[in-house]
Image (cartoon, rainbow, N blue to C red; front, side, top):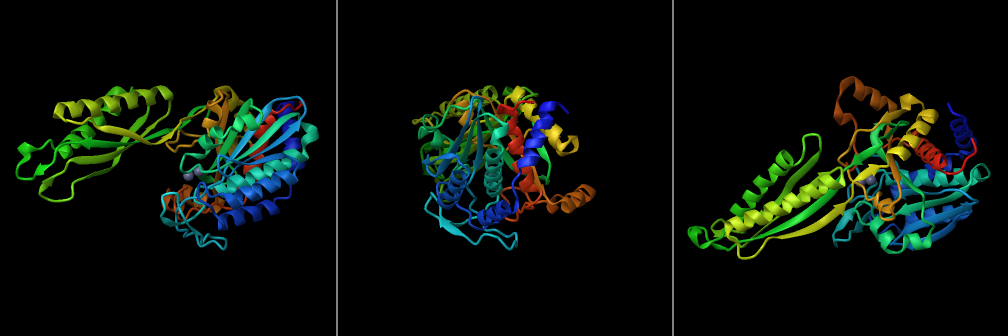
Length: 423
Ligand SMILES: [Zn+2]
Ligand SMILES: [Zn+2]
């Protein structure tokens, strides 16, 4: 182990706060989840925690976004991000601190709410990290920015904070760090330099034809036949336009057309969900999708061109290789090889990287486990996937410890890797 890594261990172990208050915060956040754009309570608790620890705090950035800035002498500026929002699910974990909450979502519908993506643990861990690094400030130099982001699940919060002038309110960071819970053994961290999480482009396609009596198809331009051709041909994008070593998926999971058994409709709508891992593959796929939709429409002789509207756009998470290697070796030194796993590429998506790519700075995003050790051992023995609940499932219930401790330690080690610490 290098002297620097030894120093980082001394700081993290020496200044790690009592964990009980953060466990209480975790259970409290879990029991009182808030959907994206509604994180008033969570952000208030996060903001007052940062204030109490000596950070300069700015609230209400891009909704309920919060940042705390700790200026601590000459050195790099490091931004740490945690997301705060929950999901519209009815919790069935049976935990004593399970959520019973309901609210009206941004679409106007009343929905149950649950922390089924671990953002409660991200917030509690980040509160612990912010305490640890504030207590340890005689041991590092630089500027630390702790950011609590709203509205990740709608893939809107990072953009909202940027559009609200985030980097006019806080110094521009040299590096941005983030982490997410995953359904592997608690106490483990997983990292992958380079392409990591997928970009998600969701498009709504409206195909315009000409309606007619079902028995007089010669009078129609049938949008159902046309949409069917489009969707079949779209399968060739991945099969024939993307190289076999690149990865992409183009899925049509929603299609609607017609209201009667004997009426050819005027319009068909379908939605495409597209996942890619790099900007260049994403551009290739999106161009091919547009070309095929427009080309098939021309082939059918439509009078009105089809409409392609973005429903959701989420960037890829493509870790800076050098910075990610630095975090990886710091994790290996602190957690040991047996607790530092190489992450696989993952088709999940995040808006985290926008906070960095918008200003052209490097970023590193990693995962940490939350599965009870006994359950994990049973899963390894039986290979029974039903033993382990995953994020976005109504029975998702990570164990409190060592999950939270690992989240605090991982974020602190990573932050100190980039702050100025004399080894
Ligand atoms: Zn999620
Ligand atoms: Zn999440």
